[in-house]
Length: 295
Image (cartoon, rainbow, N blue to C red; front, side):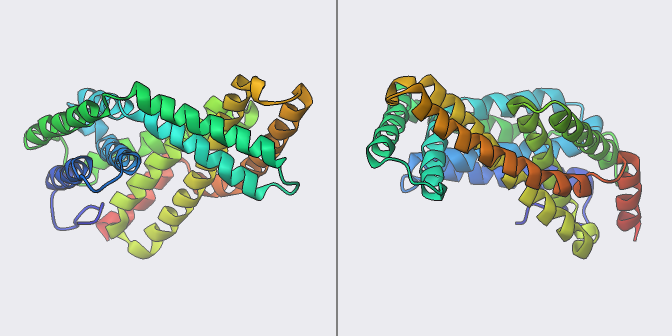
């Protein structure tokens, strides 16, 4: 089933149904012997994010929100190291392909080999990965049993209104902070809030598919751009930690400069899209979506 609310079902029914679907898929993916471990980790962490987006939408109406949000955060975090190491390697390979002036071949090989070694080291440190994956499945099964007891104290649009306003409002504040005093942490925080708004738009898509699809596409595009920006930031920090790979400080600085330039370009691309996506005041957004809901 799609990650969206069914119009003729109660919010509580939708909450439990969508949660069960995501949990079921996560358990299947994490226990699939044919799914490569990196791919499995990527998939199930996405399931956790979608579950957190779901409960964030109903958070003021959901008494168990704080507990379940922390549970999902910690469950996904336990698998983060392996995925992060793979992302850094992929980001460098992509950067090397896009550079106007190709990297020295020997340097490119040296950096690639070192990032591959870091990935393997991470995998080695996660030799208990099978037990981690098994623990993940166990935690999903625990959550699966609790979902049927989840209760909301509001119904209809009232059950989602405040959660929508809180997340969207934080996204508006995050964009101002990111561009007033740019930092890796601030852009990453904005990206997380954009992602949550994307999940909320997907969940609410049936209230007016034609209009909500525009919101969904814009949030998805912005999230991807901010994700690329963050990956480059992490790569930059990683290369700075690996200064011994370079023959001189100038050689390292030249690569960092290219990364910084690409990050700046991505930040510039994100600004107009972000301003459009977060143009409304939170209460105005809620009022508009409520009108769609009633129609």
